[in-house]
Length: 101
Image (cartoon, rainbow, N blue to C red; front, side, top):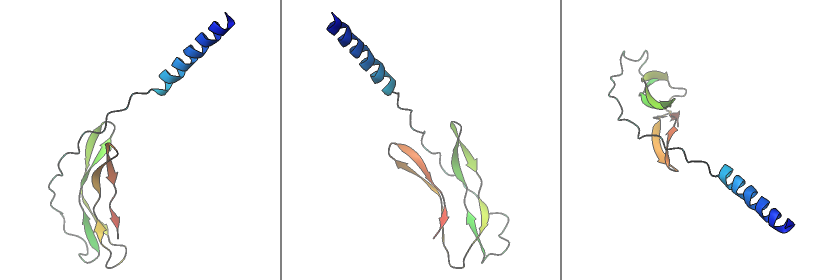
């Protein structure tokens, strides 16, 4: 009798732990919308020192939000700006921020 109660208790505990661990997988982000076409206006303050950083989509609270492009100051002459981009990795969309190289 004690053995039966012990086995029942272990079975209930095992089911409780299994249920707690089995969490639903959240759906991946929806596909990223097409980029908007932007005209870099106004012209840069100093063309040799500024680079246009184009706009991009930002995931914000359940929807994508457009962040407009802007002129950014080149930190070192000869550095090249690599635009940020969305990539599909590990079953979801991931933003790789723009950076200098």
